[in-house]
Image (spheres, helix red, strand yellow):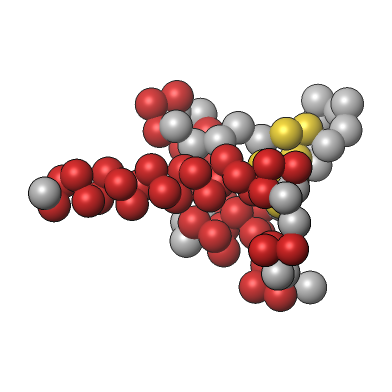
Length: 84
């Protein structure tokens, strides 16, 4: 199942964890950019939630759906402020 197959409206966004493919589909940015933005505190991009206790590279992570949606809204608001 790919990210576009998910009907995220059925879930509580504050309690729903989404994986990288869904983050990319919702934001329109690529995997490398997602991780780059996470490392830039000024970007305000949501931090990932560890799904296991592993510290190994490639350990599974997810993002809170509400935080990703809020980041999208903030980007839209910024665009509107610049245009005004």
